[in-house]
Length: 45
Image (cartoon, rainbow, N blue to C red; front, side, top):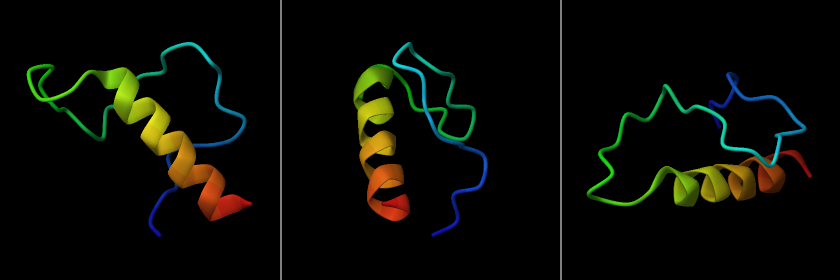
């Protein structure tokens, strides 16, 4: 896992994701936010 730019805890508000410039037409940033949180929690806990 190469996740170093993100640190816990992650605030519930929308935090910027400069690493993943994905257009909104594909899926909203909130989905990526939740996905990243799950990945982080799975990797850390």
